[in-house]
Length: 640
Image (cartoon, rainbow, N blue to C red; front, side, top):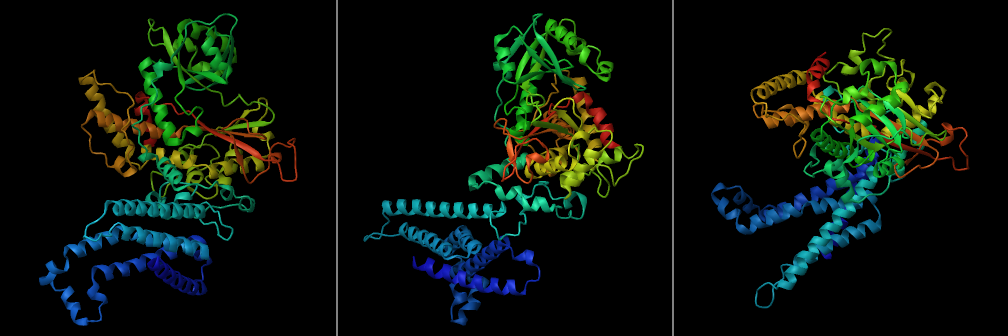
């Protein structure tokens, strides 16, 4: 334990002296936070270990016999200098050098006697077990017991050091200390995963936080996490390194069939978009299906033919998106079950919802029956059984809003994002008053952008979904905007969407390059109709730079993968985010939102001395794979 005692105490004294001097002369107090102190202590440990490594590898340098110094730098004696002993010592020291950084950094983050004693203990145990593993017996040989116990002890002491240091560093990143100034390390920033300066020139200004948000910072209540959980979250956050090798469940194993519907069935239209109609059914005559629907499920019917093969591809796509965005932010963590709907059932569903369909939907698609089947001999349409997130909690105590964030990537440096430029010709357009997705994703004033969405006319990007019969203008504007901005800042959803959006909007040249690949692939398909053009993804999604520098332009499979990823990025531009707020946790997917009281949004909520908590649920919808047939349209749209 002696080396640990002497070295750790020496480093602690040196650190305290230089840190005290630095704090006294530093004019920028933001550079004296606890996180900066941690980095300062790590630098002291690294400097000490560098000096010690030189002493072990080149003892002549620290010798008082200066006549030996030229010997070290004499090339003729290089073979004598770098002997086996010196080489082994250098490699061993370089591998274990990080431990001094950890031990000193751990003490520096606390600067307390218990932290110093723990660093001394860990250092001493590491030296003890290292010495034990090299202890020889009386005959000059090594005993297997000493080697085994020593190696196991080294592993335990190193693992314990790493765990304690990682937990301490994470607690600082999460803002767990009262005397910290709350500055963010890169991996904890609630915005982009990428450096904005890489694409947009100058770094963005720091986030604008209201006084109320500072007083009720959601980050201060973050749960304590271990190093293992941090590692998993980092892998999940950087979606382009998440492995996609896990095979999703085969949808055929959970395939339900609905050939016809009895006359007693109740058919209700939940909602309808350009491509899908969402309906609720009861008394379908299928006991297993009725059980699913009674548990809060709905049926999502695609208004274009979906074969069984396409349903399987859609399930694999859903599984990939679930890992890239996070299954907890989707309506269902696992791919939804597939429902094979017969022609007669589709005909009755079409008749049951006909009176409730909007005129603009009827104008584009007069009958669902005619859209679901591409040929008269087709008998089955493959729909999805999904959780109902819009109306399942429809009550006065639950508020559900739909937010369309659009694409926030600026493909051309110095210009607004494409969404803003495409709206610049609208009557009465004002750049200052118009919602800018880039500022929502990467800017600092998230609350300001949400307020612009709230005030936008027409209300196409922020809508009230429930309770029915109410409008957005009836809600308390300030409280609703604050609640939405807090959710967007405390969840990683915008960062993960931006990560995917880069695949379709890296720069202004990407659409033209994608168009060339699609033209070449179409020609190959014309020459060989057996080529199957369907969504497929590599085991690991590429980095942005790898995607930008794609070179396998004559490999059919690689081109299909590249275009599939391009469509994945295009999908991320059109998703919608459902935000549900409630006075009580209606299920496990609801989370408590700090920084706002429920009675600010729900005036009738029960009040207490500690305030009424507000609960929220965030769900991303419209994550279906974009069809290859729409690629020419996307090329023209993104090239404008």
